[in-house]
Length: 213
Image 1 (cartoon, rainbow, N blue to C red):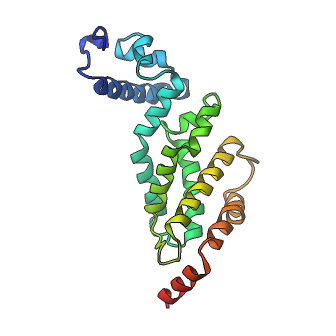
Image 2: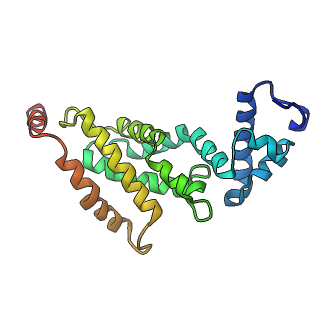
Image 3: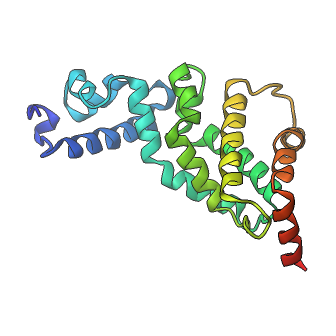
């Protein structure tokens, strides 16, 4: 690892270097928002662009890593918004709406999905393994008694798949901007809510009904 630059304080390890690059990226995003470039991060750190390229091959890769680094706080915000929502279909619909709203407002995750930064690799990552872990964590943190409502682990994995495909579709093409929040919720209810309501097997649904008596 090269030790020159870094404003006179070279990192001791590659992990420290990557962490400092991500921290600097957050600072630049706070100041420049969507105009953030890899060159700005290099300048803040006192290194060349080639040094940053050793850890992150492009601006998009750097922004993606910064978003992943911030996912914990993002999930906390989603969980807080969904606190007390116990109906499975309602929780999933509200979860999708919360993610769309939060992505639009979040400085680190949202910047990837706004005009000028969208790309096929970024959009494709919405259904990647990492995204599945993110979506499954969101589902598991909901105040829904999934087992008690008759949903198996396989059902929840299918819900994760449907949620990610729905988010991917709505991010690529948000549709009519004039649609009200109620209108979007109604669309998701017909599209996503119906699938969630129909998902538990008959036997599992009967068990859930017995438990609820």
